Length: 110
Length: 115
Image (tube, rainbow over all chains, first blue to last red; front, side, top):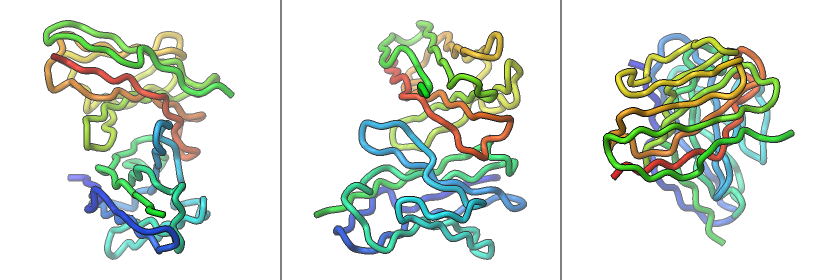
C-alpha cells in the first residue's frame, strides 16, 4: 500500500537553529514529491517540489531513494517559518494525485 | 488573480441531514480537486475532475457523497445523509493544466460539524 509518514506531529526549535522535517514514503516506482505549507490563518500552499531542485524561503528537500525519504531542511529557522508542513508524494508523477502526510507543526521560538 | 473560492465557510448540521459545498476554481484552471481533512490529519483526496470529467473518485464514499462539475468550471460536493465521522474541513483546489506539477491552489475550506 502507498503510504507517507511524517513521524513528528510537533517540532519546536529556537530561532536560528537548524530545522529538519522528516518525511518517509512507501511507494512503488519513483513518485514525484512535494512539500506544502499552511501558515496560521492562511491557505494551504505549495512550498517546493523535488523536480525543480529549488530553494524556497531557505528550505531545501533532499530525496533519498534508498531510504525512501524526502526530508525538508533549513539551516537557520526564522519565527515566520512557524506553520504546518505536509509532505505529499504524487501517485502518478504528474503532480495531480497527491497523498498528504499527517503533517508536522513547526514552532520557532524567539 | 482571484484565488479559489469556497462557500459556505462553516456549516453545522445534524446527522442524517444533507449538506452541499460549492467551489469556484481559479479562472482557466482545468483540474479541480476536493479533499477531506479530518482534524489532526493531512488532506485526503476525494475526487478529481479534469474539465467536467472525473479522473479519480476512488476514495469518494459513493453511497453518501456525490460531486459534479458542470460546464467544467464550478463544482459542488454533496453529502446525503451526513454521519458524525463526516465532520472535517472540506478543501477545494485547482491546478492550471491536466497535471498538477505547477502546484495545486487551495481554497480556504469549508468546516463541517455534524452533531
